[in-house]
Length: 270
Image (cartoon, rainbow, N blue to C red):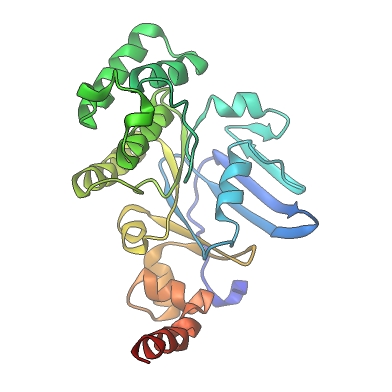
């Protein structure tokens, strides 16, 4: 979306914890991200939206130091990427959409490994593990191997591992996936509390009503371009839409898919 067709987020803020400047990323000669720029500041909860294949997970992996940008500049907590990736990892917690766990470990062992890799002091580590497992109703399962855990239980362990070292920046890629209703509600409250304590959260999700409730700013990526960067209220006002879902439909032309829905229904009737 052109600059003139939406209002950007211009509140005066301190130095950003994330600076993403003119970033290009190419995969097998195909350009996945096209000169994207944005910044994230302390205490923000920022939603990262886009259709499948838009470049959301690529963006998260670049910030996490997993992928190196083809061009452009990225810094986290003042450290440049990819040169200072090891330093950056001390400042971030990352919950990927799909992660491989060490399934031969118990939940307790996996969290101990995660905390020790981040040099969390042992006394603090054990206290944090105990408190988080109790909050997530996993205390009785802490000595069970991860290969016996359900999808929701694994997701809770991934979230716990991302928080143990009290990172400044938390990257969440579909964090509610597999969680039951009570756990999902608690997670939304936790996100708000983390932001209030000064943590910065980049939240990627397809569940737009949740993003609208928990995020105070929204980035929308479409076909590798950043087409919106503003508050939900500003985006709704600018596009004259009633909800963030309607904004998303308009900006990404998702409404063009409606005839396809009708064709499917008609085919099922035949």
